[in-house]
Image (cartoon, rainbow, N blue to C red; front, top):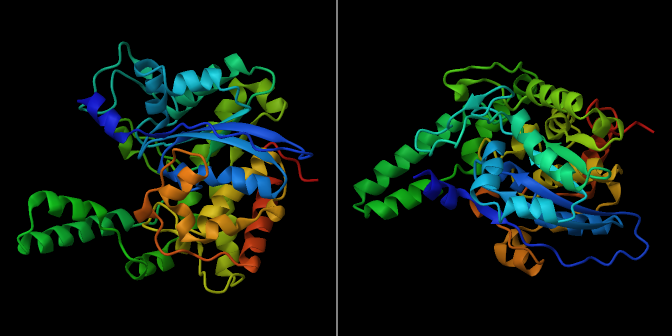
Length: 383
């Protein structure tokens, strides 16, 4: 049963990119990503275009599954070694990006025979924590690239308070309405699944969202059930994860080859500026949200990508051409294929585009650079 679930969940985009002409450009990076839809929200398939606009070559590959946790990617190393494991070992990558998850696997020391009730047990008990699973990927990666390989942790962010309950209520209301119309059960289930809150419906929750309160809350571990743990998408959680990794890989850290992509801290800094009225039309960072978790097309997704760029290339993102993120037509899967990828963007998660303007881009770019050059986990010193 778990095998069927795994097959249906795994939406891998593992197509290697054609070479980008480097010319006199200063650096080229080959990067492979492991994550879920929060990493997809940065649109990795746009990253090479974005990097090229600033004079850099970039090759990317993304292993993404909806709701996937790091241990699930590691599990494919055992169950399907010809895919992501083989690619990680043989891909000649310069860097690996790993998105942390939190709740089910927990931060550390979570040895289990299985994680889900419908999952086939592991051949032997395994530590599925984010720390152990991140280490498994990093160890395999470094076995092939010990001297130059770089590892990045991509930071998830907290969802809007009350959004999950609101979405559940909307879907239940939708189900009752469709059933009253006499529609076939399969059609009802599909429409309920696709039902997303509108921008107007989300606005009160966006306006009331206390991002700082959620982001700065302390991680609370709960053993049974582990998904009862609180604030797994908080600064406290990911900073603890980074401290663990820095202790395990001191040489990697000393050589500035281990770093955090600090999306949450960038959102926090932006939230303060938005609340101060520095970006008219965007009241707070809650307005970046599509459905309480995923972020909208346009400025929010560019913010994630520009943060990746700033940390990976150790460069201010002000030279980036953000236009690819500013048109909804660019997010179509047909366009991604034209770019040379087998990638996938979940269209309902795009929502209403939050337009990027030169002024908004400047605020975002400057904020990103302020954060990453003054951060304890980005391995970038403030010049």
